[in-house]
Image 1: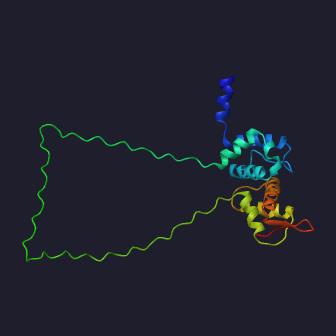
Image 2 (image 1 turned 180 degrees about the vertical axis):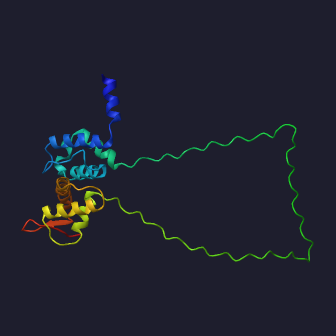
Length: 210
């Protein structure tokens, strides 16, 4: 039984593992609002939602985070170490029997003093047009869609923010799901407010300040 359970854990995808650990995080009651996620969400959105939720936990409560949450957070935020591959020296090929190895070529004799050999003329190099380097476009996620709406600088309600962010996400061909957008916006606003890059007005609107 023990070996089978270990195999099943190893075979789980990152998406399934995040969903399981989010459930543990919600049960710990350390978040201001429960993190709502679903299996239909994109893996990148799940990852960002989980990381943002962990980072929104108060410092005095961080010691209460379950070990499963801490382990997964560290795993997702630690870049993998690259180990340089060792190149083995190629074995020297033995000369086939019966065939003599090629004799070293004699170096060309120096020209007699007083006479200079004509220097070969260098042909002018043709200029090749440089191709403009393509910039890698950022991968669209619901967090990026939310940030795009906030960057306009106009105060907006969280409900309208979720609607507009969902429209941008859907136009990028990533899927239309307003409930999912509202969940990501809720987590994102809490995280951004703690960073001090947004502020809330008296009317409950949010505004990008950075």
